[in-house]
Length: 190
Image (tube, rainbow, N blue to C red; front, side):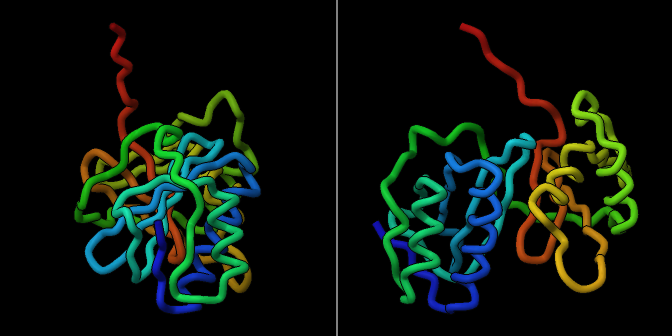
């Protein structure tokens, strides 16, 4: 198994995202996928949203789940374009991912709005919508996840772009994104 990310800056950006995930959940797993000429990274969070990031590169096999702390160690210790991302733990991945989709931007949430949502957030009301545009209703948990992951950081606060593909919503943070199903998933009982 190998992860190839040629540019040191891209490896550092992925390490930053994985580091934030691992700080929130030391037992987090990360799913890596080769998509076109790049590698996409997905991780679950305690906020019940996904964190996504991408960089030019590839992973072999083309779709694998690894332990976040192992991947973080490899990305921060190995100074080479190719590295071992850790042992495969595919059975630990829960949930689905958006397919190869076109994201349509529907608006942006200002930094002041993010701060206001986080300041009044109630754990029992995380599914309540706090922002809406173009038919996309963003629940508080997505905005709280942006702050919980420590974004945006440094410099002037920036707005967060909100996109949708119809079934999923995405809050784009530049280096990464918060992604969530727009509708709750159904549980099938057998």
